[in-house]
Length: 180
Image 1 (spheres, rainbow, N blue to C red):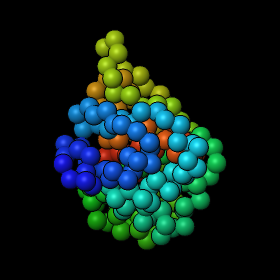
Image 2: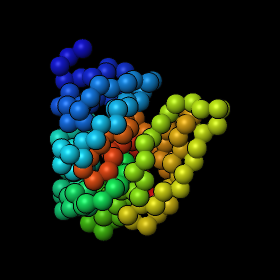
Image 3: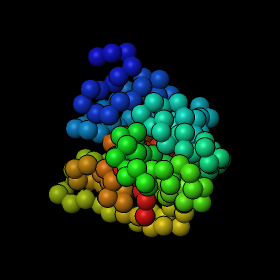
Image 4: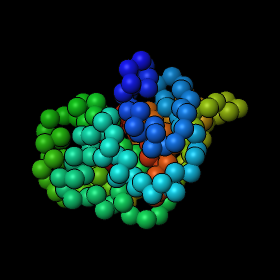
C-alpha cells in the first residue's frame, strides 16, 4: 500500500484526509467509514476538507469556479454529498460543459449536494430491512437517502465514503452527480 492510498479496492482517498478525520477507518466492500470522532473542534469546514481531497478535486474546482465556497463553509449541521472525480468524468460532455460554464445551472446542481441530513450513514445490515429518509437539499429538492442494507445511496447515487466529520456537518463522497 502506498503512503497516499488507504485502500486499493475503494476509490482513492489520501492519508491526509484520514488524518483530518482523526482516526482509523473501517472498510466494507467499496465503502469507507470513519469513526465518529468529533472533528468539529478541528474547525475544518466541509469546503476545507473537499478542497484538500484529491478524490473530489473536480467538484472542488467547480465550487471555486462559481464562487460557491461559502455554501460549504456556512455554520450549521449539514450533510455534504460530494461527487468523486470518476463520477464527473462519466457525466455527458454536454452536461459537464454546462455545469462548468452556466453559473445558475451550476449553482442549482452544487446546492443539490448540500442537505439538511447530518446523521450517520450506515451500510450495516439490520434486520433485513433498510431505511429510507427524505432529505431536503439547499436547492429545494427532495432526495431519498437509503441506508441499512448494502451500499447506501442518495438520489440513487451510491455513497462510497461516509461520515467524514467537518465543523459544519458530515461529508460523504458519492459515485454520481445529483442533477435532479
